[in-house]
Image (cartoon, rainbow, N blue to C red):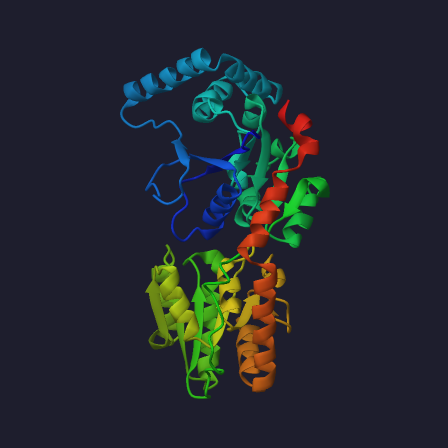
Length: 405
């Protein structure tokens, strides 16, 4: 009987309800007979529908004495129960120039991974692999790392040279867009080690409504689904809508999402004199999101930085007219003037002009754009294609020996 491939996925915490990328990936792998194990920094709320084992990093709560006792207890157990793997990690970290203190700390922090037998150890974000570059080799597994946008573009600015050691290792990389692949290659990574696997959506759930174009020239309904985070460019979006209002356009703008920027955005809307036009709906499940999308005319995603964005795919699948910025993967998510429109980021005046331009298009052109968007998402961004892509990613047998030994 063929042994099932076992994949260890390293995340900050178990994927929540809205983290569809990881949830869909886990279910897809399980559907095809793979065993998935989660390793998390913080256990948080454990989902009851993933059907996989979840292991949390050691917790160092309490006073100094308790922390010290926990630290040395984990260290001793690792050397006793898994001496070869522990020693291998120690030696590999030493060869990379890690200090003695850091080597010992790495053993303790990764002891919960060292005890597992895995075929693959996959870090869900680039920064999760930093200082763990040798853990996969220590346990005889292949190593994979996903870059999702923020970690590729922002983390090196916050933590200069954070990936220097990682990029020297034998690693299989997963990115969300062709642009991200090109940017990763700038670090000297071979294109053969990088696979583009875009996000995907449930196209049987997010479907175009059987109705005519909604906008009747009276009230334009605009929507965005995004975390209230600076990288989503929502303040620039509000500035564009302020210009739209000044030009005499009547509209409502619904924002679905939560985040630390809520007060800032609410105050910005107030200062821009469009607060009465804005509806902050907060957190919403897929059913509510689908309902709100079905009532809207235009979807905006004017991000400053964006790996790809599932929400834009969902909006296209629902038949909305979509306008995005040109941030990273968005210009691959939407094909300009074919399935939507792409506007240079940080230029609210251009965004306002594009909205008016789209509004003025003949219904026949709008319908054509909508239909092309729906067809492309259904054919190229469905869950089955994504699942097949990940199966191929983990089937790179030609690299097993080099990566694991």
